Image (tube, rainbow, N blue to C red):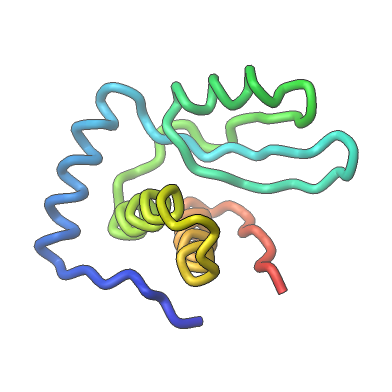
Length: 120
């Protein structure tokens, strides 16, 4: 899989520092969402406050629980943050979504959690 995110060590260090600061306000969590109708599960990364909002908005459609509270700030989490930011602006660009999926799975593996199945 070709990853489109290009960073250098200095950029990652700056981003990790910014994420560490943001982490003090609302820490990152990994949660699992299981759709009630289909039973499909997906593991996602977000900050704790956003998790609570997602839980309130979609709690009638899916069961959600935190798998890892307080995710360490790593290079892969920083790359996930870049991919997540790009995905929010990219209007379903397949390469950006593939990067987001890839780095989500990298963070899941770092935290010894099952990865999400890749879309075929």
